Image (tube, rainbow over all chains, first blue to last red; front, side, top):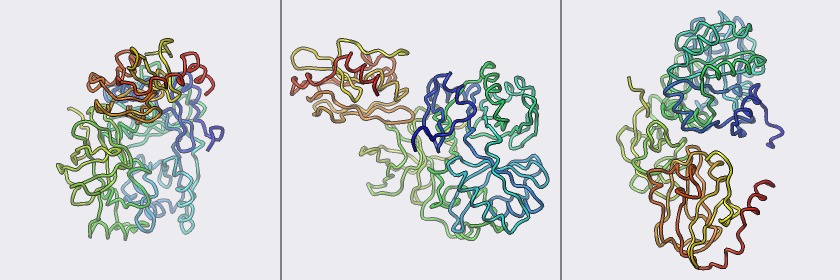
Length: 360
Length: 131
């Protein structure tokens, strides 16, 4: 795709003003960093950072059959979401492969909002549309209706509440508020392992909100820091750690699968859960030098035993970290493996989740 | 280092590497301001072994930022006689001082005449402007 075809978020001019490095990402021109990934990462761990994630997609599901429909397509037990609640789920194909992972917010009795990964938005919409036909439900693409800002870090809630003069919902809840005199959704969710909120706001007021938060001391952060933050706490990235070729059990997401609801793919997931899988996704830490990267082979006794799906340098731990699909017998904390980093074998140790744990 | 800077006394390779000639047949190599700025903060430098052979236009080392790994291309051919061990503990010197403390290797040149093919600072700046 050439640059001219890339979409821009409502905050594009603000990113340019701040001197962000902009890169193509899932069809969008997105800031990967402003001052530097490490600084931005540490700002979120110690203070407050904000991410323009307006590239993410939104789908509204509404109608008398909304719950029955979502139970059919989403892996989690959607009946457990109260009005104002939020829930993480996989969207699986019939074989149990993960088409996408998404958050669902219940906005009203029969009204839900799903946030999709931008690279999968069109695929998700087509899939949801296909399965919705036998339900009394409307599935609407509302991606253009929202800009999305994630404000994350130990000071994020305090600054957002004070600056934007809104009441914030607790974690894993969503509240309909007014921001900049427009309706807005405030979600107690995030992708960094820190407390904070995600704001779904009118694209027209997004630049003003961004500047207000910037003036209040929130540090602008790019997709680079978003990736290192989520990997330190072992949150999955679809396209890397989740793909249609792997089921949620292999990915360690059995906790968000409720097979008794009969969702599409439930049989395959139940089988994987009962019989075990040949591979499992496991986090690991490099022991010593070297930075693992996606695609690096995992070795045991010199033989291939898996592949890295996400790898980076951890700014908090100051070592190479990653996640890899490995032979299931190796996917236990403490097991020693080697990562083949471009021909150099780097000793690594399988770890438990999360790789980074906040000091209390 | 905040602002672009390409010292006149260095020679440049179009893959964003510099060489400082020392005496008749030695040179120090590093990456340019542009290279370190594109890469972002360097968090790891994997140096070659002393005694290893480097070939002009070929990769001889890797520098990594949080996000990416970049091959470092040799501007000239020779044998590694010294590597910058200080970068193991302070790889960010590549960003802070790419032409000084951020140097990467020292090489005994096997074909000093190759230097004629390298770019002057003015030529390198022009290359960046046109890219």
